[in-house]
Image 1: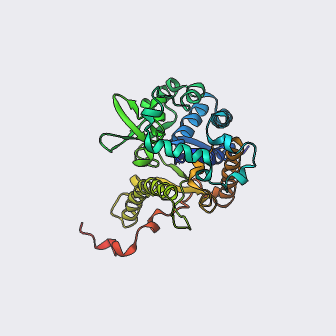
Image 2: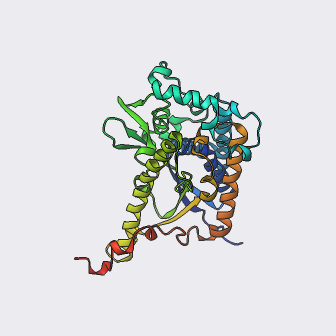
Image 3: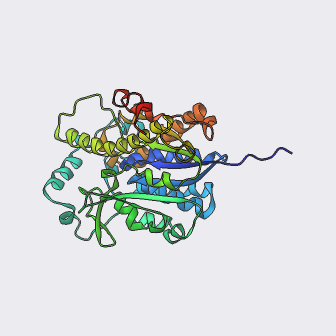
Length: 353
């Protein structure tokens, strides 16, 4: 009898992006179908933090099928929430992807109101619609107690501007809500007496803290925040949306750049490959598709739109696995070092010892 192969261990880094997190749901759903993969760690920010907590709970509670079920239940709950979903009714999701919320009277009225009144004025009772689905679907006590899966979420300290990474033993509904707290929409979330805003301002997602805890494995980044826009932002809404995208992307690329430096120094023999070279890196993204979708649709929680993004995520993961699946456990498929301008480095062998 042939000896069964050991599962290929992977860790996941999940970006934020509001309703676009349904794309990540689709990616995760496809990865969870692959029984050769074992998830040993997850780090997430904002919508990525919610995907991370729900998925981790399912894995700990009942394995990959339970994780798939709970992710589906979570996004179904999102689709039932009051919000901008009502603007589109049952229009096909692919049609909604071409629409801009900022061109609708309801969105314009909300935007005008939010520019003159803060969440503390509009939401004095601090109601957060994301709290109930998280409490309903995630057993945070169980997640804190288990030791089989590393889990981290990131939020930004309003007072100090520093990020706080909540590890497995600190994970709670408050820390996940803090990671997804956009200051224009929600009052700051307090954890241990400190107010926090969205983790995207300081780490989208926070990767280095998880990498330090991982054994040899593959690290898969699921990226959803668009880097490229092909038209110049001109309206106030377009400009503000692009400013937010640039802010969240800057934290991501700064951390990726830091990893690239480590890999560059390792290749030059200046760092121990046995210690720093134990992780293989991959990235799953659908930039060409997500960059066509207006940033305002991150607030569109209609079920057809979420299902469209889910399908896009599944298809993207399917195509990625077809191209790179055999590389998992064998080689890196995304070379961070290419992000570093060579002229800034030159011949690293000339560095003083």
